[in-house]
Image: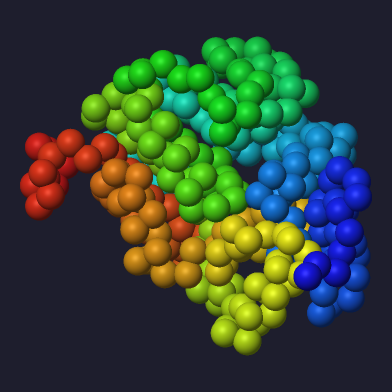
Length: 279
């Protein structure tokens, strides 16, 4: 028996926003009433706000280059040239850095205004950038084309459901050169996983509202603005990448923020055999 009607489109999105505006007790339960498609729409509405677009496209922000953890990840890349696919172009902060390093950069974002802003900044800096307005979930990619795929910040964690994330990784792997790699940043916070009693309550809310039956421990509405999945252990991270048929070249968890990153490569060589020159 459900206690909430569903008499108009966007009901679960509306209900989730209602929970977020409610008291401290109900706010964490907002994740349980929005289904995966609602969570995607929720984030898009957040980032389409003109104030958010202005912030991401700000010249000072764009010219600031890589953050400390991003620089650490970049330093570990074994592909220092070639074609780079950037998922989450924004105003071009990372894309312009990569272009200055000599990569041929293609950046993808679903907000057309940000793609235009990134192009303007590229012309201002005198570098070449290909910007594409598209849904990352439905990218049409040329097989065996890219040397590096780079996820901006913890973008990987913003895709609801393990199944969706694995499918995306498999699609990206098909678009990678055999020697290519995926630089995957993600949200890592074991403390974000609820205990048994909280988990039971969340499952109950999902059942009563016919809401988010795809909920996974670690799912949240980060900052009340977008979905994020916080991985709770190294094993959880590694098993998800393995299911996507990707090997971990490097895996790192930050000591100063709830984040981690991995450099992934295709599973070409038999288990237990390292690919030549990469140990």
